[in-house]
Amino acid sequence: MSNPLATYLHDHLAGSNFAVSLVETWRDAPGDDSLNVFAAELLREIEADRADLRSIIERVGGEGHSFKETLGWIAEKVSRFKLGHSSGADLALFEGLEMLALGILGKASLWDALAVVAASDSRLQGIDFAQLLERAKDQHARVEARRMRLVPAVFAL
Image 1 (spheres, rainbow, N blue to C red):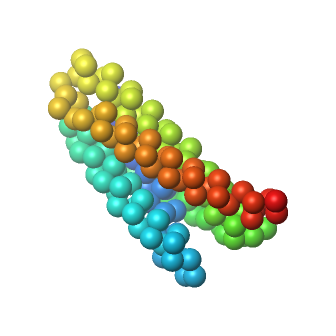
Image 2 (image 1 turned 45 degrees about the vertical axis):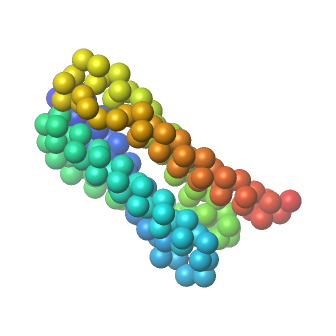
């Protein structure tokens, strides 16, 4: 793919696929209703963001990039194995939330960058990047708050 913007968008799409798969695992996990509800709410927003990103990719004319999406899927499976077999369920969730929080920060950076591009690229005009950025910031705050609540249990404080 020779279009840097399309490549960048597809990289973020692969990351969003990873996030969806990870959050689906938490939504479906037995035994923690509050985690299930938290994950279900977050999943709806992440899927909406992913749909927005796919729409942007269509506007830009980016071709499919199944190789990167496949790599994202493989990375998610490897991380699920690692996160599911660490020294405890709390640590696995803590690390997963940390990875997700970092990914959400990357998504916020995506929306910021696209807002700049939209100033000179008509294909991106009319998209409310400020609203997308605010949603990402809110997601990050909620994920980070849940992660930090785990600190005492994870590190036996």
